[in-house]
Image 1 (spheres, rainbow, N blue to C red):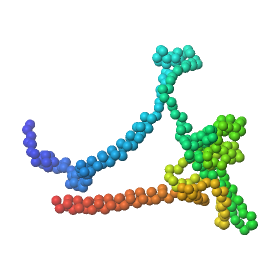
Image 2: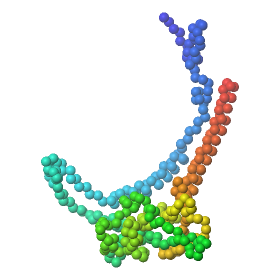
Image 3: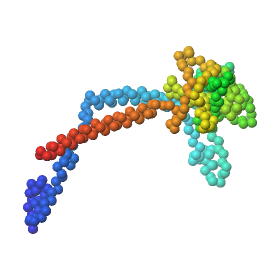
Image 4: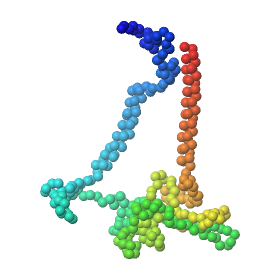
Length: 326
């Protein structure tokens, strides 16, 4: 049985069908997508664009890497393997399940001194030959102004507004991160015996509050201050004003006055102090940045979508016109 082959038949989609049959064409539709005529953009990489990018990345990353590498090398480590697989190891006897409990002692020597982490407290680590509690520059600069708020009503005597000083710190900071010296049955003053107050403090840490549950290292004003801010202009939660009942607002409209015990100096470094009364919402306090960021990103995305829609509509119409004229 013989068969003829024609190259033109392959281009046109195959050999002609038998007489009386239906013509079958395997050629893709003549559209811009199937014929791969869609407009495309491809960046052209040249030495003038690629080389400066590599140089800039190198100039940024190399100093950062050197700093991290030097800092890592300054960390001293000593490894003491007490697995006991070596027969000469004092802990080799502990490999036997019959020895329970097993206690082994390994002697080692430090060739260099390991510096105490309290170096981070410098230059406020010691004063009058006593350790400072709490130590460090952040604790030494703790905010210590006292603010009292009063409502001036129709009556002659102003009404003090109750300010709640508990509940202003994070639960994890209050109950996990910050702890007083051990000894629940010992007075707090005795537990801090042998220490001295920070240089700029008026009273020692164990006298921050008459309530021992809110004094010492677990004082919530101290805990809030020790959570340092990232920027030079910042806010710290000072007190909470709780709503008494649903019939009266937390702070009714009217005249108030603020009584300030001025202890914290800021004039020497051109600082400013403000008391801010604020309500809260489901997202916390006032912070317009998050809303502005979402609006900006959404607007840019919507604008790009409109631009791409117009471009797509324009090229699709021109492509359809070209298909018709072919």
